[in-house]
Length: 222
Image (cartoon, rainbow, N blue to C red; front, side, top):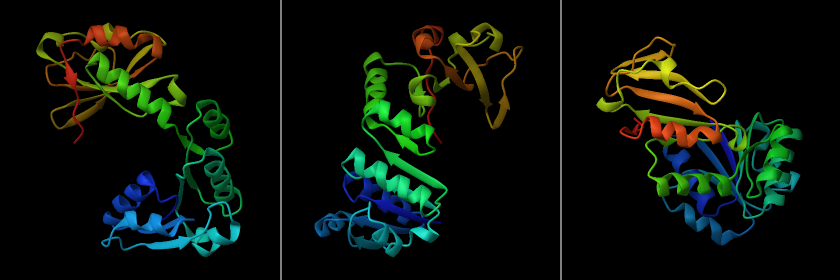
């Protein structure tokens, strides 16, 4: 795949190196020549000097044939403008934009630009670490309206049915992994020790979910 990244700061350069190591073709755009030093000598991709809100710069960087576009400069306005140019003038299907201001992130999400909001994500991660919550948080859906949580069931929490732990409109168990099998959860399914469950939880039900699984531990990603 061919990915175009605007912004070669700490996040942009780290992302570029990860994707490059995965074998993708990467083009990084930044208006500061010194920023490209962050990519290191092993980086096999391409760099383009210029601003990501200039149509000609993005065209020179190959935006017309890019499979994905990421805007991670240090300014919300530049990221938004770059993302809209990528989406509307180059018709790039996958466009991701970093925005620090949550309300603006919601607005541009409605315009079809996928946004990542470090302010909100960071606060949630700190909250979960502070509370020692028994789950691994996954990227929240719809700007905090619901959150996907994964937990590995402890022996003390086993024996309950899915219907016993779900709450209408507030807690929904979406899927369950048992040993090597993955299944869609249903009301009569009985939880066993070491089951890994994925739950969709409303913000006002997070504490209740934590209480139900206070003996369990976060499910570790494979």
